[in-house]
Length: 136
Image (cartoon, rainbow, N blue to C red; front, top):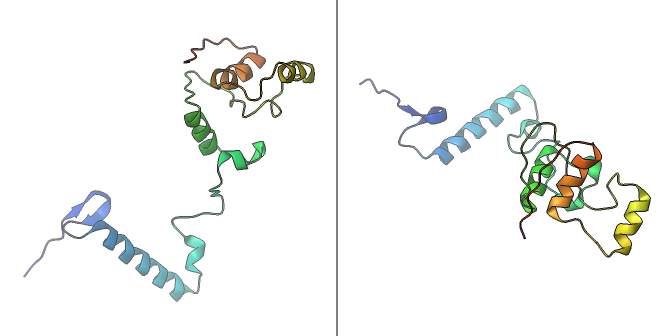
């Protein structure tokens, strides 16, 4: 009897649970790597060396990746349109604002920038045009 294998999206066999198929594929892949004498954890599909699960608040400015900036913008509901837009301010002390102005900001009692300040100030410091809408 000739049985036809019916594939659905991403080469999964129809009628069989996709999670079961993934587990079987992983086991097969790990068996092949062991047969070659290689450590399968090196080729882990789910975690790479570059992955860093820390929240953006726990990272230094230099450690921030594009994913962190996207989450940051989502947290503060910052949306932008245009090209080559600088990253927003995380806090006052990490900004490139001159120290004299930072002292005035601190003496005025502003502890953290508002969402529109977070994005508008870096754009303004580049002498670029901006139209901003702040929601109260």
